[in-house]
Picture 1 (cartoon, rainbow, N blue to C red):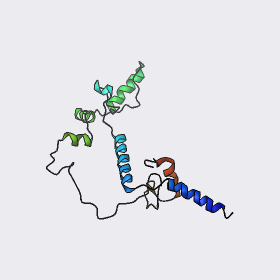
Picture 2: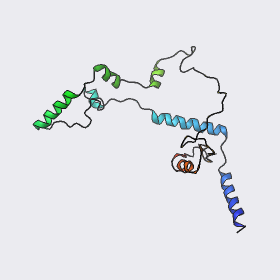
Picture 3: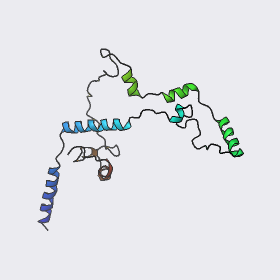
Picture 4: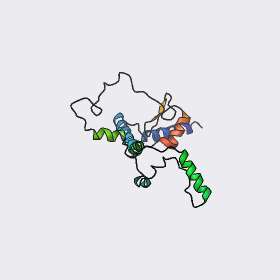
Length: 173
């Protein structure tokens, strides 16, 4: 029995040495790449449906998401007309805002802000005098451990299980 524990401990140590901890520089590069990927996946350009281009509804915003079109029956037509009277029609200005809305990044890039004056693109702040805030990537509490593969921090075994199962992307290593 005494021989198995040192052999097992040596095997675990060898496995952990193979997955060496990441340098701070590589972690920063990895985090930047991860944030860029998130920005790309969250980017959505507001679209106009084909019916809106023809003058119809804008993505179902007129309030008839579940309403059926009358098929010929008198009561179906009467119910549809009664429902349309109750609905508030959107004004032309609201329709234009919804059809041609732009996200913040598009507005900033189209503004052609001068580089010699302080603005959104040239804004800078002093480095913080406080250390960076460390939070568990799963629950947000104070972390006690960090993942060997990706360097993201977690606080306990349940958060580690969640991290390993769904959040560890093994970005570097």
